Length: 249
Length: 281
Figure 1: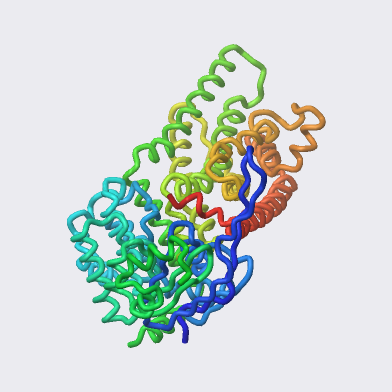
Figure 2: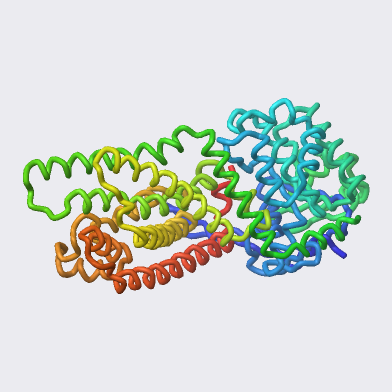
C-alpha cells in the first residue's frame, strides 16, 4: 500500500493588487506522487517551485483544484481524521502557543494525538529537550523551537511523517543529532518520511529517493545516484543548481 | 504489536472518545496559558469589575439625585452582569482563534492534526464558558458586597438567561471567526466590536419600548432583547415571561446555525484559496 498516493494535483492562485491587473500563478501543475510505506523520500526544488503547496494539499490543509490525495489508504477529504491520526508534520515556519512551557505544550499535543506520557519522556530524552522543558516557548531560540516542533511530530509515533525544512534553523551539531534521531526512529518504527530541505547534506544522508519539482511539475524522480546520472553531476547540490537554472537535461 | 494494529486498537475506542480527547487537549492548552498569563487573568476579572463599579456608582448617583427609575439598581447592575455573558462568550471564541492565527501561528499544527473544526469551536466555547462563569461568580459576589444587589435572587431563570446569552455570544464568536478566516488578521477589531454594535438594540439597560420603532423591529430579532426584558420582569417581581424565553432560545438556535454554517464556509474558502500561507512566516 502507498503511504501517499497523489494523482494529478493542480493548484493555482489569483494574484491581485491595487496597481496591477489580476494574474494567475499555477503553483502546482499536475503532480503525481506515490510513496511506498516505509520509504524515505525528499521533495526538492527551488523557492516557489510548489513544494509547500504540494505538502499542504497532501495534508488536506489546502484543497487541490484538480486531482486526488490518499494518505495511508484514506482518501481526502473524507478520510482526513483517520489519515491524520497516523500522520504528523512539522516545519520551521510553524508557531507554537507562547505563554506555555515546553513541557506543557508537549502534554497538549500528547493528549491531542492520544500518545502516552512514557512516549513523551522518550522523545524529550531523544532530542535532549530536558534542559529547556520548563521554559516558555516564547523564551526559546529558533533552533530550540524547531526541536520542540520535531518532538511534537514524533510523539504520536506516526506511520507517516512529513517534515518541511526540519533543520533550517539548526547549527551543524544539532542538525546531525536530528538526522541521527530520525534515522534511529525510522529504523525502529519503519514509518514513511517525506522531507523537504535546502540542505543537500540532509538529503544525501537520509533519503533513498529524491523527487525534484520545478515550476509546479515533477522534473526528476529516482534514487540520488539515478538523479546524478541523469543530470551528469556528482552531488545533490550541483543537481539542484542545474534544475534551479532550468537545465532540463 | 504493529503500528497498524495499534491504530486499530486506538480507533476501537470510538470516534467519540477521540473527539473528547482532542477537545480536552485544547481545553488544557487554554488552562496552561491562563495559568501563566497575568493579562489573561486581568482580562477575566479586572475589566468586568471595573464595569460594575462604573455602573454601580452611576446608579447610586441617580438614586441620590432622586431620578425616577423603577428598580434602578436591579435593572442597571443586572444589565451589566448579564451582558458580560454575551461579551465574554463572543470574545472567548474570537480571541482563541486570533491567538492561534495572528498571534502565535499555531493554527497549522492544529490543521495537520485530526482535530475537526467543530471540536475546535466546542473546546473554545467550553473554555470561554469556564472563564465567564469564574469571572461572573466573582462579579456577582462583588455586586452583592458593594452594591447589595443579589443577582441570584432571580432564581432558576438566571440560569436560563445565562445560557441563552452565552449561546448568542458563541454565535457571534463564530461569525467573527468566519470573518477573520476570510479577511485575515486585519479583521481583528471585530473580535471586540461586533457584540458591542448589537448592544444598543439589545435593550440591556432600558426597555425595548424606549427604542425608536425601526429599532424595536430589529430588537425583536435578537435573543438578547428578549432576555433583558425578561430579566427586568423577574427583578420587578413579576412572573417569568416564558414566551420571551422561548423566543430567545429559538433565535439562539437560528443564530448558532447561521454562525456554524458561516464559519464552516469560510474555513472551506481558506482551504480552497490557500489562505493558510498568511500564517506561515
